[in-house]
Image 1 (cartoon, rainbow, N blue to C red):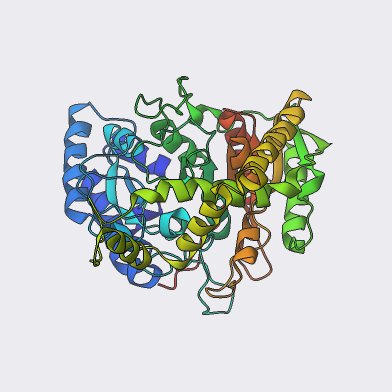
Image 2: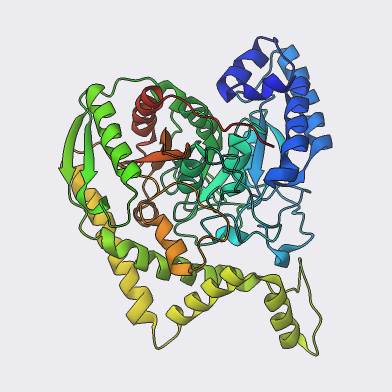
Amino acid sequence: MSELTKLTLAEARDALKARDISAVELTDAHLGAIETANPKLNAYVAVTGDKARAMAEASDKRLAGGSAGRLEGVPLGVKDLFATEGVHTQACSRILEGFRPPYESTVTANLWADGAVMLGKLSMDEFAMGSSNETSCYGPVVNPWRAEGSDEALVPGGSSGGSAAAVAAFTCLGATATDTGGSIRQPAALTGTVGMKPTYGRCSRWGIVSYASSLDQAGPITRTVRDNAILLSSMASVDAKDTTSVDAPVPDYEAAVGRSVKGLRIGIPAQYRVEGLAPEVSALWEQGIAWLKEAGAEIVDIELPHTKYALPAYYIVAPAEASSNLARYDGVRYGLRVPGDDIVDMYENTRAAGFGAEVKRRILIGTYVLSAGYYDAYYLKAQKVRSLIKRDFDLAFEAGVDAILAPATPDAAFAPGAVTDPVQMYLLDIFTVTVNMAGLPGLAVPAGLNGKGLPLGLQLIGRPFGEETLYSLGQVIEEAAGRFEPAKWW
């Protein structure tokens, strides 16, 4: 039974359609795997066993009746940022204690409409603010990977660390995640999984707890490139409830997997060769270039001159939007309420107790840069820099580049507590934030192991709505590198 959890999403989908396995069997196998793994990994913050079995039973009936959806019976995990009707949705923050929304996010509604089964809610950095999944009010998530010969725990990356860890540990076939500055691609790279941050507007943001509204985007984390393409096809849609969602047909992303990449022009940005890049990551990048060249792609050097300003500009724009979005959490209508002498006292007590240190830090930064005396000096300037960053990419694509290859992270996973300086933690997103600032798609693919046996990923950056090209290129890297899984210790 436990071997069912080793199936890829595509294999499980096909086995379910062929009636070789039942949705109930597959769901029970994953619930058993969660029961074994979660006490050690802490990836799930809520397991919805009864709901999962009921959904699986309904799937089996549809499979028997010939009315199966394209994800019928496939068990998935859901990041705690997505509203799930009547089910724990807390953004892993104390301030949303006890919140069970009376509505469903558009992305998860799309998945359930296609027949997917919900196993539970996955941990994350509080309000998606973090790069190591250490800021969750439920405590840190543990990476299923360990260095060879070591019992030391490692972080899974963030903010979607629970999603990445759950997928890597075979406790779900895929997971929803979100990416504001790298929160899908960075944890995917640190856990040996595949993570797609789609073009801004490709997936609806409705029903996803907001962090920075002009940067947030939902996407999938899976174990293979094909699985990722299958999941994104169901997650993506236009939505009248989200005016930033794009009214454009959703392609059959799976059809792009295995497509020839011959003749595609791949840009290599000079500005991504930064100080502090681990030699093994640099070597892997060169290996990735060689693999794409062997597959028939043309490699060209490109310039993205404003890259060095991306991280500081991001850490002005994102906290500013967070300061505005998080103002709604006041203890009045839902979530945590800490009494006070009057309403202002209650607001202050609730927010002081409800938000963690990193969230408070970003709210304070955001409030400061939006204040009357500093708005022009910081926020307005950061938005101008953002336009220049986007223009850099536009010029590269106008010059005929089809996609860009870069590292996903500066190094492999590290131990919890190893990075305590906030700025050092922010620097972990150095290769990912530019993609969000420009609204582009980015795909992280496992590409190798370092000297300690830990996974490293490469990142492919595409033209707006160029996800199909990224999946074609990602498949080339996956086939050349092979697939990796952690040695089971939990």
